[in-house]
Each structure stands twice: as C-alpha cells, then as structure tokens.
Length: 192
Image (cartoon, rainbow, N blue to C red; front, side, top):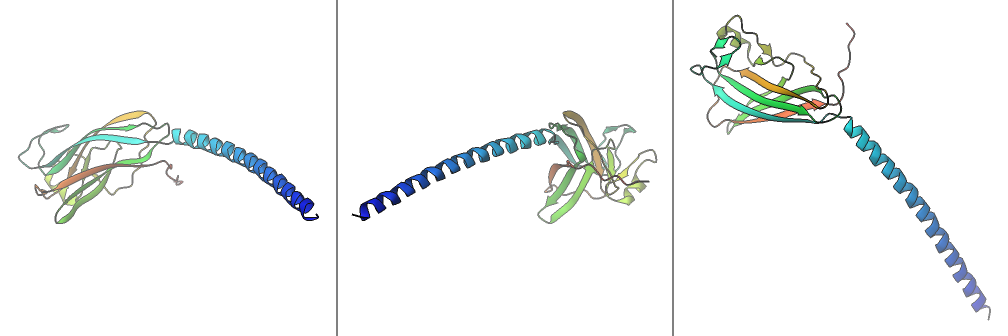
C-alpha cells in the first residue's frame, strides 16, 4: 500500500522537474537566440564598415627592347618590363590601407619575381638599381621596397597602370599571378 503513494509522489516530482527544466531551457534558448541575432546584426554592421577590394587587371608580359609603347616621356621603352593595366574597386564602406598588387612570376624552375606594388599614383617601378643605367634621365622610377601607404576609400574605383622593369626577359614558360592586398587597420602614426 505504501508503494503506490510513493510511486505517485516520485512521478509527480519527476513531472514537476521536467516542466521546470523545459521552461528554463525555453527561456534560456530565447535569450541566447536574441543575443545571437544581436551579434549577427553587429557583425553585419561592422562588415559594412570594412574595405572590400576587388581588381580587374590585364598583364602584358616581358616587353623587350624592340617594343615601343607610348609613355609620358615619348614612344620608347629601352628595357624589359611587365605592364599591368586595369582597375581596382573598394566595394566596402570602410577605408582600405596599404592597398597594392602582389605580382608573382614563376615557371618550372621556380619563383622568378615576387613583388608588391603600391597603388599610390606612382606607376614606374624597378626591381634592380642597375635599371637606372638604361633609362632616360627624365624617367622617374620608384623602388618596390620603399615604405609606402595608400588609403583607398569606400565605394571608390581607381585605374591601375604600372610598369615593372627588370633586366632579364622571363622565358615564354613564365606564368604570372596578380593578387590584390590590403588591410583594414590604419598605419601607426609615428611622430616626426
């Protein structure tokens, strides 16, 4: 006889516990879902403030000394170069910093060139100081490895037109790869 009331009491206790746990987890799940929705909205807002760079570029490879191209300095290009043309676009709402193009040249022998050119309004670059011996004195060249920063604002498009001079013609088997690079972090200001 005593077993029946104890069994009913245990079943009642289990039922009350099950209901309490279900209510607690439903409240907790609703709270967590609201927090997740809030965080997803915050992430979307932050992403809209970030830069998002895309490029469309063409490459004319290893022009040799007999090729003539119209430049700001006339019709000539006395040494081999790689010419890059196209455009770059920041589809994000934020500012992109240190915007540039990484240019790789490689073939079955390995890596021939790995440089990054900044998009800073400077369009003539060299990979070797000896290049200056072959150029007109009027022609301004910039070293690839000099420090640079370039800010590219949101929803902005800019044309890309650059020459990278090198001393050696790359073989016909050379493959080129161009990738855009940038950071969303502003450069650290260093006092003068």
